[in-house]
Amino acid sequence: MATPTETEALRSAYVAAREIMRANSVESAQQSVYTLCEALGAGHTSDVDGHPDAIPLDLALDDHGPVLPISADPAVQVLLTRYLVPAVADARLVAQRSLSSERLVTEATQDPLTGLWNRRSLELAINRTTTGDCIALLDLDHFKRVNDTGGHEAGDALLVTFAHYLRGAVRAQDIVGRLGGEEFVIVLPATRLVEACSTLHRIHQRWQEMAIFHVTFSVGVAPVEADPTTAETPGQSALRAADALMYRVKSTGRNRVACASP
Image (cartoon, rainbow, N blue to C red; front, side, top):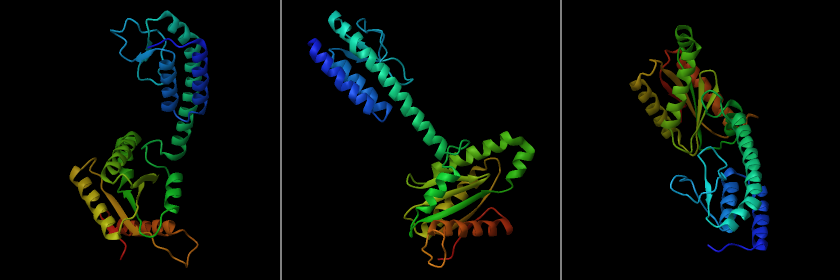
């Protein structure tokens, strides 16, 4: 690999700096660092052992271990120190900014205990549903008993376990969120009512067979339909219908799935 001239190195550093400051993710900033490293005449490796020509300048912007430049050319090492060191510093600032933004988004949209969508993000998703979607409202039965007998740690463990189970039991396009307390919502886009009911029956039956914590749950399932007689969005009306169905289950013995009439 030919050693670039000072002018070529300066030009590459300028291009890299511009790309780094425009980067909107850790990955894109990292790639700009790697590109500059190569433009300055060096390679890079994460396999530190066995590379005597590795230069002790960590190019990694994350916590996955060091990535070091490789070059036996003293002139390249000078260029790396002059132009790559400040580029890595700039890239780390961009990475920190990107990670901070991701954390803010996570905190704003995710339930902190279960990692599912929180109430606010669920409401936004429900309001965007259209005719042809379905909404299910699930409520753990006798949840208070778990807290009373095992303490809040046991209750939290149940909520986390149930959330993990639900997320793994639905399709990738389905939305699973925690509405609050022991209530959960599943939004099933482009799903007929009969299909949604079949899905919730399967989820309900499998949970019973697993007998985790020996806790059951009740479900109401309703389709999203346009209703010109109400000011509610179709999604809000469907959630209210699912809620009424779920409470009907609660008042008549719990531990089953109730679906709206077609």
